[in-house]
Structures are given as structure tokens and as C-alpha cells.
Length: 259
Figure 1 (cartoon, helix red, strand yellow):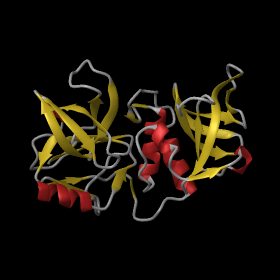
Figure 2: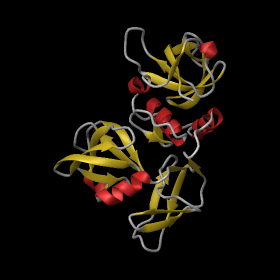
Figure 3: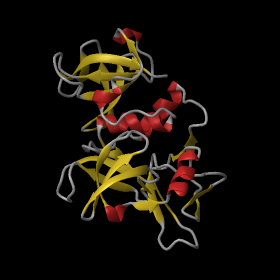
Figure 4: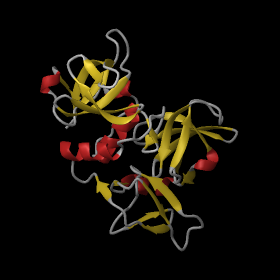
């Protein structure tokens, strides 16, 4: 088994090897990976956090030795709360760029270390040392407000519905699968929308089909989700109601509580 890490802000993960293939996911800065195979300059990878597979350009990830990889896995998780950041060090050739939700290995006192290089980062961070409250989850969710919808995206510069939910809960110390059809298997079922609490996950889809959408319940009658962009909509027992079009856009299927 080979190991690696993403040290770029955003690395496209594709369904097949090739620059023109569909992007199904993204690696963010600090994401750790298993390398499972190679076709020419493309690596078949599996993410450590959610075991999601896909193909990345070899030039866009950095290989790690087993011992170095193991040490990075053990590091306490800190995530950047800044929209976008650039940090430098005297010893590294190039600056590092990362976005909201980037993992900063070994972060402590405004510093973090990767592959023997120490970086100074004075921006805001969050730690998963303590489980997040519903209030914190909603605070992280609001950080993505206005982010454009992007299939496979996981950043404030483009994100899909399940990527949005995954990143918000990841910063809150809860690791979720990548896709909404997988996320719905987690947590405890809430039977009715009037019983939902802030931070609950709300899933949508046709009655006889797969789960196709997910969002985060804010308060009675309100949900934040990625659809066109990340924004707040009205929700009731039928689903999400768009005030502009005066139509229901997503049919409510189930509600899950993780907090």
C-alpha cells in the first residue's frame, strides 16, 4: 500500500483517469489518501476519512512514507475557518494555498508542520477536540453561504449538497460518507418535521427512488442547503418550498439526528 496527501487547495477526483472525465469529488488541502493503483500518470486513490475512491493526477498529490503517513493520521484535527489563505515558510520552495475546511496537521499556537516544513498561520481555526454543538454546526454551515453549486465540489468556491453537509459536520468532528444516499444511513430517525431540531439532516427524493438531496435543518420552517448555491429555503412536511418560484423543489423523505 502507498500513501499520500493533498497539498493543493483543490484537487479534482475523477470517475476515470483523464482530464476530461467527470469530477465526482475533490481533495482539499491536508486530505490523506491511500494509493491503490496507477494508470500512466493517474492514481487510483481512496480517501482516508470516507473511503471514497477516484482518480487523481499524480502531479497533484504528494507521496508519503508509511511512518510519516501514520504520524499525520494521529495528529489532532484542526480545520481552517478562513475563506482562502496563503502561507509561506523560509524552507519550502512554494507557498501553500488552502480554503475553508482545509485540515492543518499538527496545528498548534499558530503553526503547523508538513513533511518537515513549518508554516505560520494566524487565521481562525476550529478543533474537533470537543464534539460540536448544534450552534457550532450552523455557524460552520453559514460559512458556506453563497457558495456556487458544483457537482463533486467540497469548497466555498463550488460545492454540492452532500459535500456541503460532509464538510460542515467534518469540521464539527463527525465524519460522514461522501454521498447523500450513504449519509442517510447514519444517525437516528426523526419521524416528523415538527420534531426536527437545529443541526438535523433532512433528506429528499422521490417516494420510490434513491435519496438525491440533503440539507441541514436550521429552525422551524428553515433549511440551509446547496441547490444553485448554498442558501436558506422554507421547508415543511412536503419538502423544500422556493419562495421565488412558488413551487416545491425537493420532496421530503426522512430526517436524521446526529447531534
